[in-house]
Image 1 (cartoon, rainbow, N blue to C red):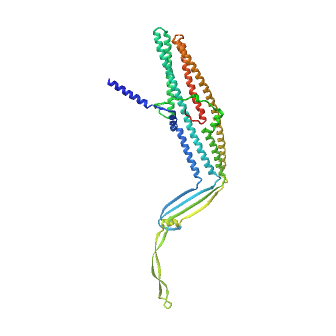
Image 2 (cartoon, rainbow, N blue to C red):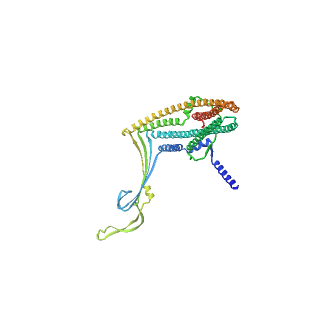
Image 3 (cartoon, rainbow, N blue to C red):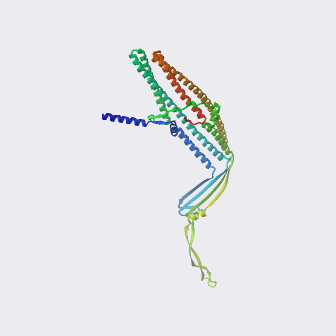
Length: 476
């Protein structure tokens, strides 16, 4: 007995553990997770980062350039002392250092327009990122609604199967009592088998919709998950704007339209920047240079001594020389230090460079023509996107209107079928109608309920599409 109780407790614990690990996702959680893990969104994020780098670099190109270089050399044998340009026969260590700067004064505003182009391109890729996120959100909402729709269809099929099972058990008892013919029980068994098949099909559809949702979230197929059901008041889901009004809102809010218009603006800046190559280029250049050589030496006074020096001879005795003491300085030599040589050898330069384009194989002209064509193509892209958006809005508007009418009609149909089935069931229980009539009424009711569910979620989705075009939050 204890063993049985222990086994029951273990199984119960495992079942409860399995239930705890099955996460129930809200729509907000699904959307946030999908956006954070979607590879297209990540790629768009890197495109935005690249645009930021390009824009910063285009701004920095308008500042002066500054470069420094140095060279260290070791020479031996017969060499030229770089500080004196004289030949020396010794080993020489030498250092050359140079700092140069260049400032572009004029080039036909080419860099300015290139900077504006990079700025607009950054805004365009930012809109691409918004579009990528919107696409992911729309896809997740579509899959979420499909899951919820299939869950309700599955619940409806379960209820239908349970109702048929109860009716079958009741009919079998009546057949055994001789109140009903055996054919009624056989017909109900066939209906029960049909309902079981329908339940299996609904279960397969539900599992497939869950699989598609997991794939959109990039989750393994083995992940246990469930979704929170919708609680939407469809009475507040009316369509209160015309298709033209929705289009006017969409054309100002849709990221693909904004991106196309920004690239249209970018192509205009690119054309202006390319035309700058027609103009002269004026550059201000400056430089500082210095050098050091180990062959450069300086004399250092060590002291002085009196040294006799012959200055002549006696006139009356030419053989006798005359001497005088001369003060002679004594020097030592040492290499001039780094700091002093760098200071003494410092050279400065300043100049203006003028470059006038005369002929370069039509490279500039061809580049300008290509830029002009790109601008016209960008204009066409804007018109194409606006036309596509208008057609999409008009189609979505008509679809939403049709879905609203279908949903209202389905509600009326369910009400009528429900009342008809209730009356038929009462008459069937009294024996006033046969099983075929009862079965037809029951199937009609469940079909009407399925049609209502389909119309309900179709209307919810298509109304959300209209909300999307109006820039409204894609939430319930």
